[in-house]
Amino acid sequence: MKTPLNPFLIGFAVLVYIFLVGPLIIVLGASVSDTTYLTFPPQGLSLRWFENIFEISAFRRTIITSLEIAFLATALALLIGIPAAYALNRYRIALPSWLSTVFVLPILVPEIVLGFSLLKSVAVGASTPIFLTLLIGHTLIVLPYAVRVVSASLASFDFSVEEAAISLGSPPVKTFFTIVLPNVRSGVIAAFILAFITSINDVSTSLFLTGPGISTLPIQILAHVEQFFDPTIASVSVLLMFLTVAVMAIVERTLGLTFLAK
Amino acid sequence: MLKRHIGWWMTVPAILLVLLFLILPVVATIGTTFGEEKGLLAPYIAFFNSGFQRRALLRTLEISLATTAISLVVGFLTAYVVARAPGRLKSLLIIAAVFPLLTGVVVRSFAWLIILGKNGILNNTLVALGITAEPFAMLYTEGAVIVAMVYLFVPLMILTLVGVLENIPEDVLQASSSLGASPSATFRQVVFPLAVPGLIVGAVLVFTGSFTSYATPQLVGGEQQMVMGTLMYQRAMVRFDWVGASTIAAIMCVLTIAIVLVMSRVARRLNPMAT
Image (cartoon, rainbow over all chains, first blue to last red; front, side, top):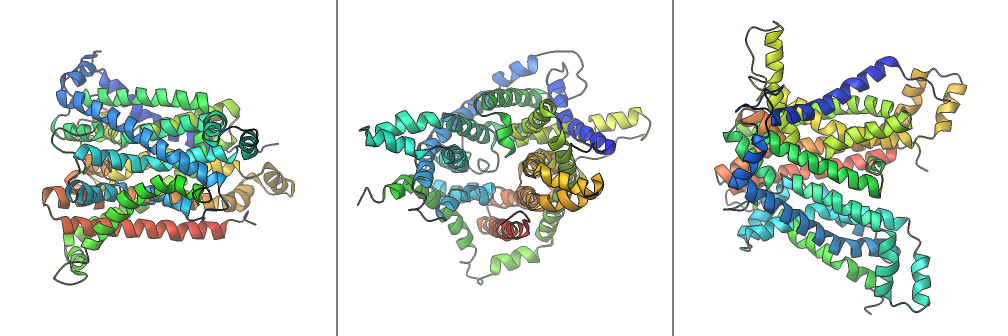
């Protein structure tokens, strides 16, 4: 039997949720306003600010760069993160316990410090092209998702199943792809999605890693806001919100959203 | 040989990535601050001798502490309601917290430009209601940065604490009430102490996140409200003072890592459920 909740507490929680959702509804409203300035409630209805996004070449370019970086960084992080997560679970006894801490370091170090350090040491110091440096930075910040989320689903995988397959004559590498990977599929999908959205939204790491012709969408938004205060940014924001909805739908299908509350 | 160390080999690419592109560059950045001819600690003495930079550090600490304190209270009370909500409503409330969390920092900070601006919603409403005759400057104040930061971190706090509160076994609460504790006594003497480790974890996430943030103070605080992140960017990219920027980076890095290490130890020690 549960004791009833204090009505003031419920009222407070309702206000908090209005505070959480309200600003996003305001952005949505401002994006369809038929005015040349940002306003809410919208005056007139128009989708011209959505068209405007694609008429500004800087936005077209940075949307493509952001998508490219997010796909490549996520794929790379999974490529090196899945074997690491597998080893951390399969050979737990043989590996030292500090090893898993190494993969949490990208969360521990402030992103803005990582971005600046990559600019100094890698982009300038080792004359690495800026796109490649940006890709390295994003791969690093999404690596913890790849390792930890995949690790979490491997933790509940029974490795004796894999041993059984191997002892019955299945080669180890083939066993990994036919037995292990399908069993942690939902973890891999969730890791992909979380890593992708983290990369797309990143500001602090990318901040220092933009060069002539190369920038990411969030950095371009910051630059645009400083010069123009028109509804274009509200429209771009709404596009990013649609992406979030899509992402949430996929996570819900694969793992259930309550997974994120853990 | 290869077979015996197969576990190691599988982690090598990931370790190399972290070592070569995270540990080495960050150590190099911190290292440059100690290589000055003027003396070992010259960049740090210069940092603390500048009133402008000292104020930025204090402002950042102030904003981060206020954000952490407010997010803790708001997040804990809300999480308590969410954790006790019935099934479907609970999923809905969790979704409503996840959505802002997955929406980018830039989008969520930008929303506050529309709300707090000179011709923003809040000012227009206040003028329309006759509460003020003139719109007043809310944007580019410390308060604006704190509000936008709280907005940024409350969902994270709610989700962290819902997880913590759900792990409190139901029979512990039943035992408390069957022994005669009122609901508020149960909350104060049972739920709260059990949630303390989770509260510490949440506080660390919010504090380090706000201490090193860039986008929100840049958009909502502007040049009037320089914080460590925006100051570091300005030193590096406007003044091309890389040693100065590295000094700020070193202060941010050392402070956040120290807080994480110390507080995670404290949280582990305070955990009453630990065996």
